[in-house]
Length: 318
Image: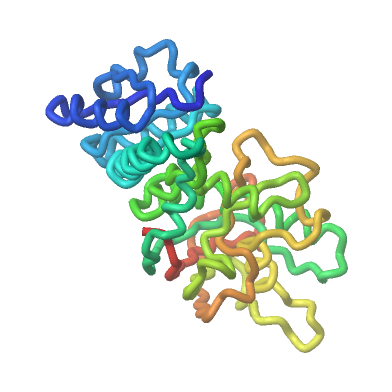
């Protein structure tokens, strides 16, 4: 598989030829299909280093296309629509400059998209959403050996919701495919993949929404619904009633390897968490009320329902 082969999924015939020519001038081998049906009918997607999804792809269609590619062709890199203008055009300029210098000395013809990402402007992006948890919120001492695994079980539920958030939120879905580094000797790697490698530990690769590098603000408004009597989530003087700390631990990356399972499940690479560390939370507001739905056969009296309203601001490359 040649690293400069691109499959272009076009949704606008009026710009198809223009974009194809631009990519070819930049030194890429380009084949095109039209629309989602054309992509799914293509039997050779795996032969390409990258797939470029046209900017004209409908917003409600793009997550489906990305999900299809990640499921059926995980080895193929997915390029965002703005890649044509932001990177291919610069590749054409660089290639022209190198051609002028070729008579004097041999120069490298590789394109490092990472340098363009570094030179891009940074902007603050507000991300607001709600997480739902239904189940046990244990009242275990930090020294109890069962505590860390129960925390991870809660963390796994949040992973599934945060994964969908990254795929569906407009500001975050671009980060999924934004090219991080490329040369003509290697395949594209999205910034998400690079970020997952940066936060790899204990056999897992994590994607925190709020990190020390990108987090500006993170506030939590928690509604706790319970069937039993009033429950104090705030730790007591004895340190035994630590449910709030259990919840915050489940929202962050693990600090030690005994906080996770032996290996991630098939859909947990990367593993999505809210934050790198719970010290990044600026404010927590807690309200409690009664849960009036009757318990199912799998639920106990002390099971709770949590609705967590997350208000965050993160720095993202523009």
